[in-house]
Structure formats: structure tokens, C-alpha cells
Length: 351
Image (tube, rainbow, N blue to C red; front, top):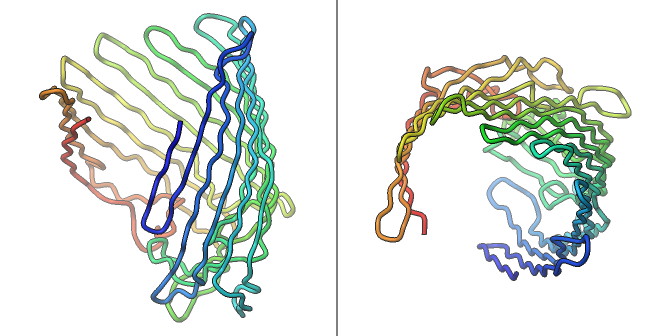
């Protein structure tokens, strides 16, 4: 499988080959992936023109032995970030070429102890190199209502994670529950400095790489109550701490979830989705508390064939009660709530 994608200032290339089944081994694959970015900022930003090249090679293999399925993956990443010129900035430090490389991988085991049930465990080692913006940003990010400052001293972000899950799938529905823990070294995130940039009157955020621990869980449930009528619900929660200080990790979402009801008859589907979140008062430094909310959406979809193509018409009413609410992960929440009542009419043709 060969893939090439071009953008205005970037392009990427991928090549994947699949292995033939052999004995207990199934679905094996290997490949390479490369990306090139040419970044240039203008206006009030002083981020230097910078190029970024990334190269990765990966290997995946699955083994099946009766009810037991083992999946293994290994990947090596290398990245080079090269500013157009070296410079010492009084605000962010020594701007120069940076190189990063490391391995990531995972081992996952699934055990099908019943035709409808399987349980599993996944252990992974993750790696992420900082990008251009995280290293060298020096200017306003208006969409995020912030003045962002990079950190040229950032190192590799690596982590060890473990997931435990139980999955059910039957004729009338499915359910899955997952618990996880991730220990991350050098976790990269924009940290509020508590200072205001007086040139732009925006709060200042600087990218940091600190040790962190995240634990949490997710729950998904879908069920067909009657013919053509189904319900679904999701619940998720993440608890994050800075390992060295024990302080709450910023930018953690509160307990949140959805509840959906869907009715389908012939070519018409009608439904509603309720989105809800609890208060978030477990805050990192300089973070603002956000109140919980409940928001209801409605939707209708009609599909039909015209010639050889599938066509759909969607009408969506988001936030039907025009509720004012703010998401904790939004950096503009202090000046602007989430959208109020919003009506969409979409027409799609599938080729």
C-alpha cells in the first residue's frame, strides 16, 4: 500500500507491506512513513521559519492460538527540527537545530472466553518528539486566546501505560469497560505562567515537559430496546497528577458522558443526544473552575440512492435549549462560552 499526501507547506509519504499468514501468525504488516513541514509565521509572531522532517518505520504482527490472540507492534521514530537561523531569545532561550529519536511499542493480549465476551490487557511504551510550535513558538495564538512561548530545551516525551478491558458483543448490542494508567516522563503541555503579555493583552503559556501520571476509565454501552429503537451511552474520566509535586495536572477533562436515543425506519433516522459534564474544580496552577452542564442535540437523516451514488440529507440542531456552557479544555472559556443553538443542513454524496 503506497500513500502520498501533499499540502501547501507539507507533504507525507507512506509505504506498507502486508505479510502472508503463516502458522499461528495473522495480519502482519511492516512499513515506513515520512513527513516534511515548512513552517513560517507572520504578523505579531516571532517564531522563526523552521523545517521539520520525520521518518518512522514500524512492524506489526498478530498471533492466534485458539481463544487467545496476541498482538505486538514496534515503531522507531526520528525527527529533525531545523530553524532557518540560530538565535538566543531573551524570552524562550537558545533556538537551534534539534534532533530526536526513540522506540515505541506495545503488546496486547485478548482472551475470548465466550462467543460474546473477551477480556484483554495492553502494555505499551510510547514516544513523542516535540514539534516546531512546542519548541520555538513566540507569539499570539488568537484561536486559543493565548500568547504561546516555546521551550527549545524540551526533550523526548516517553511513557509506560497499561490498559485493562472487558468487551461484550451480542445480537442486540455491545458494551465495553476500560481502565488505564499512564506514567509519562517529560509530558509536553502548554503551562499557564500567570503572566499577561502586555503587547497583545493575552495570557502567556509556555510549553513544559514534566513527569505526569494519568489514570482513568471509559464505559460504552449500546442496546436495541425494540425493533428500530436503540440507546447508547458513554462515560469517561481522567485523573492527572504531576509526579514530582503531586499537584493536579492542568487541562484534565472532568467526568463526562453522553446518552443517545435513535429511531430508524426504512431510509429515515431520527434521534437525540444528551451531552453532559460534571464540575471541574480539581485545577492546575492558574486554571479556572468550570461548571457542569447538560446539553441536548436533535438530528434527522434521510438517505437515498441516485444513480450509482449514495446520498444523505442531515438536519442537526445542536444545543436545542440554547444553554450557556463552557468546556474545561477550551482556552477561550474565560471570554467566550461554547456555541449556543446551532442548526445545520448537510447534503452528502458518497462516491
